[in-house]
Length: 146
Image (cartoon, rainbow, N blue to C red; front, side, top):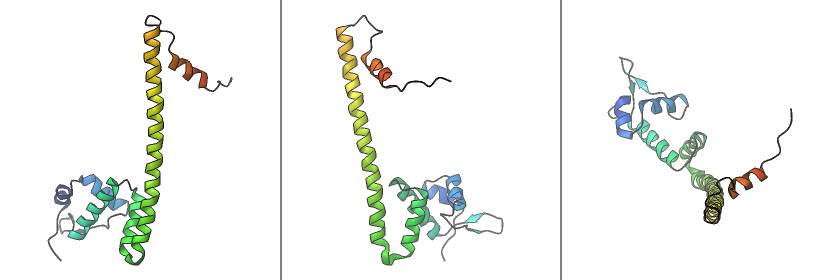
């Protein structure tokens, strides 16, 4: 079956912390490992490969529930490719929406920055007349009285 590794060795090999490995076990992403006579966790190559799979999936932005689903798909390969494609399409849609939000935020901040620069050039001594603060104050919803 191959050599068994203890949790510290697996952590070094994968770059994960011991706590992260234990967390993946508790959350059900990784099966509970066999134990040595002394009670140490013993991992085989399959578990190490699963941990690397979890790491790579998280780097792609998949949540733990999505990784759980990817594991399920991986174990039933007949429909795997189409299902994974659908998961990636959904994740890509979320990423693109976030990018669009960030681009809008960047445009708004650049516009505010230009307004500040123009205001400072026109009225360098009047610090109480910031056009950005005025706009923010005007768009604030009225406070409810208690």
